[in-house]
Image (cartoon, rainbow over all chains, first blue to last red; front, side, top):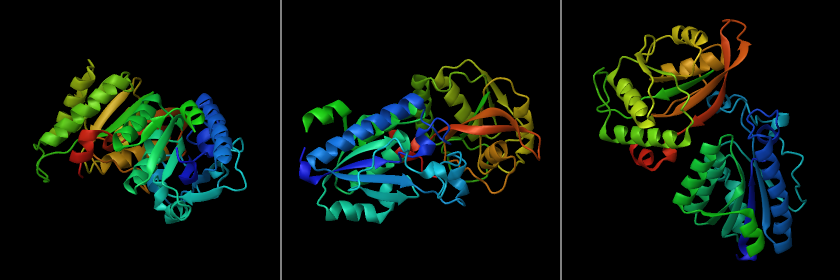
Length: 185
Length: 171
């Protein structure tokens, strides 16, 4: 991997998705794994000079279509919309918000990537079939090389995780485990 | 206790004809969705399938059951037409003991889901694209105003994730 042109995208590592009593939890074990691998990959990214980009949802309280499906998760201003405190956020990180599945719906994210000369993104976070998939596909369509860290991606259901990973692979994303990434670069 | 709400698949000409069947693409998507769920096992607990009297819902239900390989009751149920009040179906679900799949129409499915989750129909909180599956689970609580059971979303499956659906499921 080209270390100077890579960004690590950490998607929606928020309390409502990762904490056991969150509004839309992925489950305790999955959350622990995602958090642990996210922290390892953040450390790795710092050591090899990747940009760090944290992205979190802030859904408007009035967005009835969607808030019910998400059980009211990650509503703007709610404690559940905060990034899980177990996740390390280095001071050099970018932190962006979004209100749609696709992170690129916030144009500032693409601007940050382009201005930093990024041409490859390594993606982790939740949910495999939702925001991760939508963001990965959008990144591919914008010309980025996309690598998905399969074991650092969460979902609330195993079959939805498999569907999300399969869908991203079909769309042209590279699927790698965290150990492959940590050992290869 | 779970209920799986499914909107019928893409049908032939867009009209009010109750006899209109699924389009070729609609059948293809339904079979693909059924195969996916047969392999995932996520709908294996379904005990009965309720569908509206309209042909496109009945055909969707039949294709799903066949593709899932389920030996379950297929019931043409009242209260599932597009403009029906969702209250009657919500009442019936209150008394259901085994997981049910409901194959119906918009806007009624959106109203039904909102009724089950929020205890009222407005503002509508769900928008079902064709062949979308929404899994709800009874929580044990009761809505204050209606006295009906509270339900919460367990998961939602969007058919656009599957290849045939991506090209064929135009609304």
